[in-house]
Image (cartoon, rainbow, N blue to C red; front, top):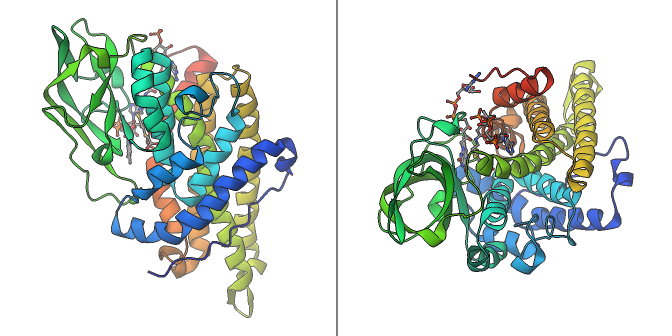
Length: 400
Ligand code: TGC
Ligand code: FAD
């Protein structure tokens, strides 16, 4: 397939740019330029072949997209350690990456929020020094194992477990649907100890009994690699267990950071679909005039830009609250859920506006649309996030 020319123009109907600092705009620009140069020309081809473009790992490391929340001394962006990035910059990075492809943003989310963040927040100094710089630079790729074959939305019922065996523990169990597992050197794994408490362990490729079979046949996130983590009596040194967290709040704390990135990211995908549909509607003629001149097509475009604008403003406000340390996990859930819903609808409408061309790889819309079926499901399904909001406003738990 011929490389696609990326002519994206970012929609900004309410002049949200005026709310951004010069530094935030510069960061967005550098990631946008990277996506135009390195992602847009190749991504369709990789998605069609269901292949992970491994070269992006080093590129994203060089660009500073890994570990935005980790202090600069460990190779991160400095969000949680003082100095460095702010949460709006982090969000803008994710928006631009997902404008390219959800799988590219996924790689950055997993590495930064689900692997580097817990090693920094819950790990020992030795763990931080050993793993963080190599993960920040992209020399190593990490993955995050929470979901199991029989325990997805309800991770507290997980079966993966470890038993004490002197200077190490013996880990058994299996994780499923793990982004990047087939290419990872390092897996952050959540498992139960002998008392039934959830703890995090760093499992390294090469440990005997540890395998990462690839999941095949996905119609979504085809340019992202997904697999399992299988532990068959794996000896994990005790020095690889996180000393500073116990319980489900460990993995859920990581998810709050990653879900924040998704709220921004999917709006990037929506912006790409809107921009593509708008341009197409002015070029494509039927019944003697551009299809953009028909009311039904204008309704779709008007609703798309309205929802994008509302989400941009919500994300900006959430970014301010995150930077001030005042955002709640429930606010992050609302933003993730809303952004995924509007982005999914926008991509579906854009696909229709392109008619038959909408199902081809000539345009990015069908790829985005299919990707978003994963994004609306992972990191908490659409309905789980609704129940989180429901519980927050009523004080009543409808999960169980
Ligand atoms: P519950 O009793 O409510 O909570 C247990 C403890 O966790 C605390 N907590 C949180 N802490 C930080 N951030 C959050 N978002 C938190 N939510 C809850 C809570 O305060 C409590 O603390 P403590 O001190 O009292 O122990 O737990 P529950 O068992 O009732 O479950 C609640 C529920 C359903 C909301 C939760 O389990 C959930 O979010 N389920 C969805 C599972 C999920 O999101 N899985 C994601 C897997 S990873 C993934 O998809 C990566 S995709 C990566 C990519 O490619 O981008
Ligand atoms: P289930 O939990 O079985 O849910 C099925 C349906 O039931 C959903 O509609 C759900 O909303 C609904 N449901 C469940 N409980 C309730 C309830 N109490 N009330 C009402 N409805 C309910 N996981 C990781 O750990 N690491 C990863 O890197 C990772 N990457 C992923 C990549 C991809 C491409 C995909 C598709 C998934 C990934 N996941 C990952 C797993 C993902 O987080 C789970 O798929 C998700 O949390 C849902 O779990 P489940 O698939 O088991 O669905």
